[in-house]
Image (cartoon, rainbow, N blue to C red; front, side, top):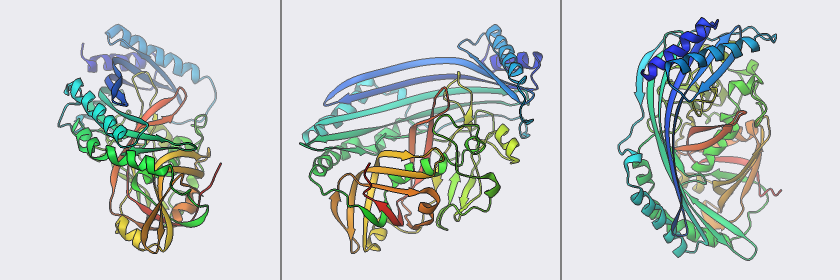
Length: 478
């Protein structure tokens, strides 16, 4: 019995039990991770699992059931059970809705991969991490850490509307971190970001990160931060580096434009959204430099795929165009309720989880400047980069972020290093103050976006470039 056969059997069983729509997703995932600390490999994790998850729609109510078996009997039982759950849910009065119409699709997709990450020898991977931590220790780090993760995921999707698609997504990446401990301060520097960098690529991505070339630098910077001046408090011109911009986009744009949050369906974990659908197409979200896209077609970015977990083909669309809010992340059911004609942003983090609206690659299009040009054009300000902490309210509106490192800018030149830099703002006011944007974009990959109950971990991508903002309050404490 093939994986398509199992999915087909589950869908047919759901229809036979009374569902008006059903889909089934067989998923097989292998995962590997390794970490090293202070010159020694500390942990190696390897896992593999497979199963089938079935969605059934009765009236306007969903049922979902998943099993770790791929036999015909198990698949059919899962389909029938999903319909039973949907029928029970349908006894509760609710809004009459369905799914936006789509054509059934057949197709295959695979992410680009030059070097199969699971085929690289464990000794080579361990040597890479150990060598990076030894270099950080030799250059002033009291605690030196390095790690990587690999996911190799195959999916087979079938729906009662004629979908029959399969895809293989290979993701990997990693990062290094140096911590320096002083008498009254502890400082950390990370490369390339606080959580590493990941993409839908093979081991060539980790090789390109070149930990060896950056290990000494970040250890020395962590040590230097211990005695650097504290970031001043006040209102100033703020330049954010690309890594911090990625998180700024993720938290204050990406989550805010998730349609299930806007509709109030998703509220228990990290809240809903300040956006009102009645303002879609007219709301001024940011300055005219602000162009944000939803694009799962970017080759190698972490939020890329061929089809989402409803079988919708990947497609690029605008979320913010010249500062105006014009698009959302949507699924077929939320789009139907909102009266929209597109979906394509629904994924689950495993076969046993119900797919939900998730970010794909939500990114800021680059501007015309370089980082050095923005610094040269700034008389008095601060440059911050690499996220250290974040806090944002449950409407995704008021935020406060801390960065690992900052530098003062005086008369167009980068000056002293600053420790504990922080800034705060209100989403639309902050984005409207963006007056310069760099061309130096990079598709940052975030492998640990949390959402839903039971919680799911999403893999998202955020193309971002350094940007300048005016009148930003910095140096906030507490």
